[in-house]
Image 1 (cartoon, rainbow, N blue to C red):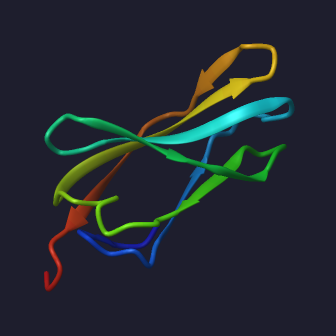
Image 2 (image 1 turned 45 degrees about the vertical axis):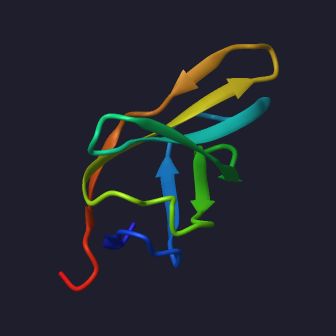
Length: 97
């Protein structure tokens, strides 16, 4: 990910889960905002074997707070097993900074 700015939509979040996603049912990119609330973004699997997933930001409201955010992937497999990736911390900047 490049620099992330609050209330901007030209962004693709990518996470490498380092988990073989064969047989996945759903994948979400989870995000903990600076205020502690958690949101989920529906992810697209780009590479099943390496576990590369992404989400293209859809709304100015997706990143509505500046400060440190934590991102991780959560996977549900079609046999009801679950997995999550290691969390990554990124700073969301105010525009103009």
